[in-house]
Length: 333
Length: 287
Ligand SMILES: Nc1ncnc2c1ncn2[C@@H]1O[C@H](COP(=O)(O)OP(=O)(O)OP(=O)(O)O)[C@@H](O)[C@H]1O
Ligand SMILES: [Mg+2]
Image (tube, rainbow over all chains, first blue to last red):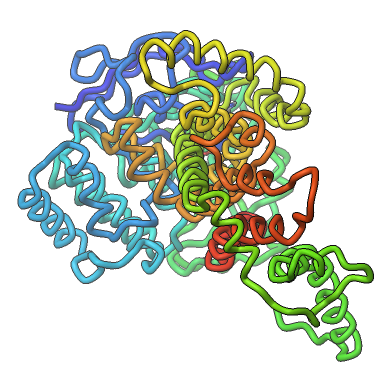
């Protein structure tokens, strides 16, 4: 139904190689998230799959069929853009019906499907409005409605939630996840928000400068990052990296320990430092500890409220089985 | 933007604007006035402004000599026809320049504009000869008139001379339209034709409308090619006017009447479409 395979796909813009040749297999029905820092080529990769950009090399297979030279209109994929890209001169109804109209579907069937999509997305009261008369969240839903009506082989999302406010973002995140549960259609989702990546994906593709650093389930990436880049990118707050003597003691060029795997104590522990900033979130407290002699700052996540304030001396103990070891080239040891 | 403007300054600006407006309008006003004067009054020195025997004689004379409506019809055919043709070519052209620009798109645009800087008379002879040759080769043999003094030839020429401007105008309007919307249409299964027909054209409609209006006006007022390449069959109102400038006798009043008749339709069109024109011409400038 919607298996997408990239074989040696590369993209150059003039001289600049934005995506060096890469292989990737996205199984049917999966929720695959591309994450990576800004400018790493996530959108470009998505647009290559969509057919909106031509590949410079390699092949793109959709359900085993070579689609490399197939125009976007014929690939059977639907896309939701960051800017929503709704047709401003058409009503919500006409927007959602547009792909069906292009497919030459009969009017009654079209209307039925549009009503159905609108019902699912709570858009029924707005069907006769123009996109300009909707809120950001409603526009986003129209864009999703336009994508789902024609039952595509796969959905492509390019940072669809980045224009929404935080509360709405969480709501839409859940809606999209539920949509995937219900439809079981392949979804490829681009984001630079690693919380979105962790919560939505069943597989994450971490990109860096156009290269795939690692592919895996969220927990695989969290537990066993293949290199320092992935280790630093996945997880919030960021993993602490320690080099030098302490790393050498573990037989590595560098070691990494996540903030949630370090236990602070006021009087005893492995590492001694001074609390710089304490961020109290209520449920958690983030301590930024200085003067440990290991790294400039070590971030520690403590559950609940703890009685440590800036300037206090603190002792830190890492959980030994949670220490990640890295070689000089960044690879996991 | 309600800004406090000192009343004195406001009065001054208003007076100045009126002065400039009247200055620009004066030749038209004078032409219209002259068209109602008896011929001797038209050339009287010092000129007579309003105090003369108003007459419609000139209009009657003009109409008796040449049928205005023949020329009017040709003007309509040529200006509307060439504008529609130009739009049909320019919309896809501007689409490609705005949304899939190549390395040389900017050069191409400049080159097109540069053709407008060439004196038209420089290519009059070759074009005249081409049309004459077409007359010999096609018109004589098939009876389909495509040469001198034919609608076909004039339509093609008027289309081509205004095409650079039409493409430029559309290009600037199209560039305001986010490319992602067109990409969304492509993802939704739209062919190139669907994309231009259902998405781009409706979205750029204000721009296309003002391009249309401006080009109709330009084509209506075009005189060089129409005067030189038509005789009667395809002759528009510009040719109509020249018919009344004779080397002998008094002709100013009749010429003015002919001119008034020629510009009247376009004045009316301009008057009713001025809002659209201004909106289109400032499109993108105010945002
Ligand atoms: N049309 C283009 N011409 C030249 N370079 C381009 C073009 N499109 C993208 N790039 C370059 O390709 C690189 C990757 O861009 P891309 O938009 O894919 O990044 P991204 O990962 O989506 O970033 P973001 O998170 O900011 O959206 C960037 O360095 C960008 O400058
Ligand atoms: Mg992007």
